[in-house]
Length: 189
Image 1 (cartoon, rainbow, N blue to C red):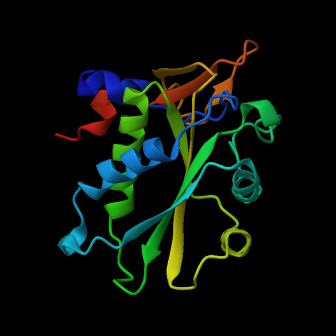
Image 2 (cartoon, rainbow, N blue to C red):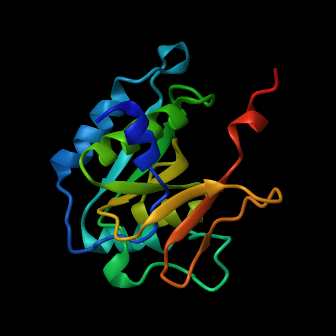
């Protein structure tokens, strides 16, 4: 698949086919992709907690805030929850400055997921203390993000933004609409 198609297919999916299970090998493949990405000063401070088991997935799920703009929708029902998670951690024994490493790694892993007809959603709205306790994470690891992964069951469409309204929304058919600024607004010269 060409990079343009991968990027356009890569959306923030929030509803998945929970019966489609991912394997540990698939999660390791995504981390392997991330391992080959750029890292500030080549410090490589990112570490990953892999979750596939339902019990651990539930512990992670309970710490996440889902789709803040969708006031009538709290979270996916059990059958539409992600089937895997990658918790992205910063190893403070290496550095406390992660710069853009996590963003590069997360986007790369998501593009790898899309290539395999999977999808995901990056979470920064996390109850980090609860997650630390739920997973019994060592204090040296700073919780940066959670990447939810699975086989998407929702349709997400990109549309031109109107009236500077950035809020995504769902229509009566549960199609998820994401407004984007026009290209000519992004380029300043």
